[in-house]
Length: 84
Image 1 (tube, rainbow, N blue to C red):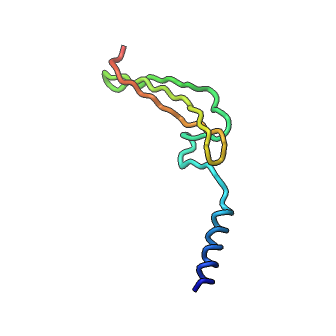
Image 2 (cartoon, helix red, strand yellow; image 1 turned 90 degrees about the vertical axis):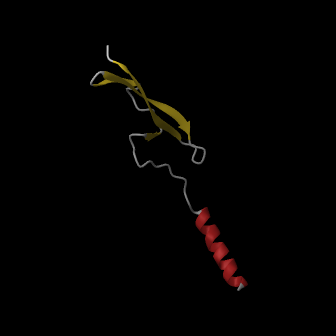
Image 3 (cartoon, rainbow, N blue to C red; image 1 turned 45 degrees about the horizontal axis):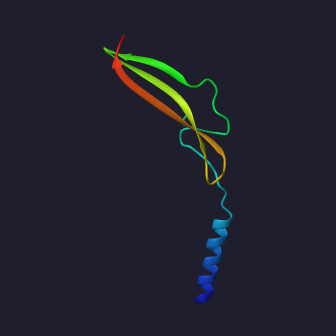
């Protein structure tokens, strides 16, 4: 019984030791690794009827503590108001 526990513990530790830290995003337009995307911030005006929305897209730097890689997270700010 003790041998089985020791073998299972050894397998669990070896599995944990062999994992690599990776950075991934299900939506690559929201997360970029390494360099800041060029051409930002972008400001656009969207008109729907009598209401206008100002949309500002920019990137915020974030250092991943696990891998140490430089990440850029997209920030989208929307402000509604009357059209001018």
